[in-house]
Every structure is written in structure tokens, then in C-alpha cells.
Image (cartoon, rainbow, N blue to C red; front, side, top):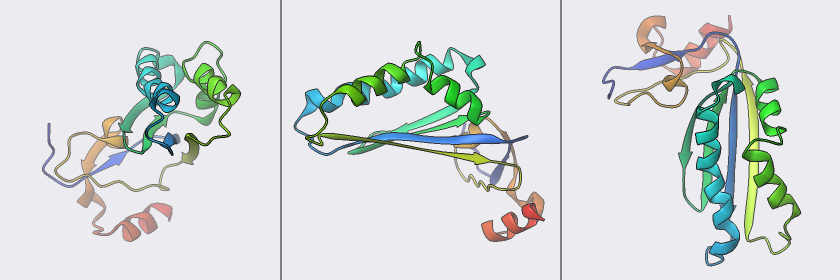
Length: 158
């Protein structure tokens, strides 16, 4: 469903934004990088079947540098998943860490951010539920009466 109006996501409490991805440095060496790319959707399937992990939602983009955007209830729950020997992530990371990657065929990266009420801003126009808007309440963006992100963020911080 496409929402035609201008919306913002309202999430109650803190949440974590987790970005994880890989970069294919040598595209012709498919046997080296393909197993890492295939691990991404497996991880999401596993997490969707285990809501008790604290996982909320994910979006994935595939390209030379692939990105998976995830939302979590807490950093503690994210770290528990990442350290869980039964999860899809830890074996994939262990395989990458133990492999001889000195040739630099594939690179991996991750970043995590803790967001709190009033410390983030979202706008969705002509979009289906997406990103944080797929797990948070969507409300009209004009409800604060501020047109620009800087104004909305300043209002929320006060």
C-alpha cells in the first residue's frame, strides 16, 4: 500500500539501527564472495521467525556494495544475536574471519547506532511502509507544524 500523504514514524522508546554489508572488490571471483552475499537473506529469514530476539525489521540492497539495514529493540538484544553460536550470523562471520582474505576479494563492514525519542527524524511520501515506518506508528508529518528536518529535530530535542 502506497501512502500518498507526508508521514513520519513515531517509535516508542529507544531502538537500534544496525547496518551490515559487504563490498565485492573482485566481481569475477564469484566463488569467494557469493557465500557471504547468500548469508544476508538467510539471516533475515531466521530473525523473522524468532521475534523474541528483539529484531524488528530489515531492508536489503544488493550491489557491488550490499547493505542490510536492520532495526532492533536494544543493543543488548542485537549483541546477544551476534554472539549466539546457534545463529546464522556467527558461523558466517567465523567463516569470513578464518578464511584467507588477504587477497581482498570481499570486504565486510557493520555499524550500529542507538536512537532515542526526539533524536531521529523520518519522512515518507508516496511510499509503502519502509524502514522504521514499517515497524513504528505512521502519523502525518505536519502534526508538528515544521516543514524541515532541522526544525522538527530542534522541536523534538527541547
